Length: 220
Image (cartoon, rainbow, N blue to C red; front, side):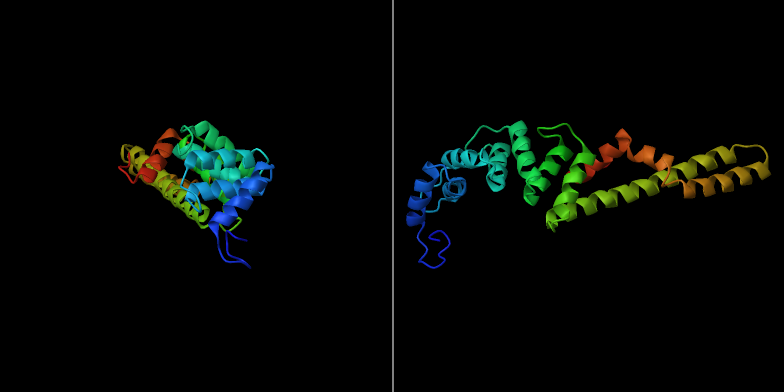
């Protein structure tokens, strides 16, 4: 109450006293609040080492927000040595507790291969879970992935059509040129949802294009 000023005048120093007392007795939420006060310099000098210490105590008791905050500290190297593996681990714990922000962060770790093996399917899985909770960042990330997938399907289709016509124009018989070219084009138009497009989307080249998109180019 002293932290937010609900029912009493806002007083960070008083809040700090009460949270510290409770935190020292093992109260998980007070440990979280105390960590946040140190992280933000509320009623006490900003101290990320002390913040990480209290976040860890709360995180060890299963507080999802503390797990998220400790993961951020590990990812950024604030108050603790930078450790992507530890960051991903804490994001995973918080994400499994349903924390949407942690789900987004864990997805980003998978998309970039930070602390975990690079895995786009796993990244999208966690982003979808966050998006289902209305997280705007997750919705934006999924939209970008879908956009790139659609363009890749179209590119695959056009590439196959071009390949068919290269074969067709090199045939000696004009009738067969037209048959192969037209039939091949029709087949390519109905295949984007099939094996050709799937194999393209799963190819290393598509993944490189996806990475380039995240970097903002240049595209291979």
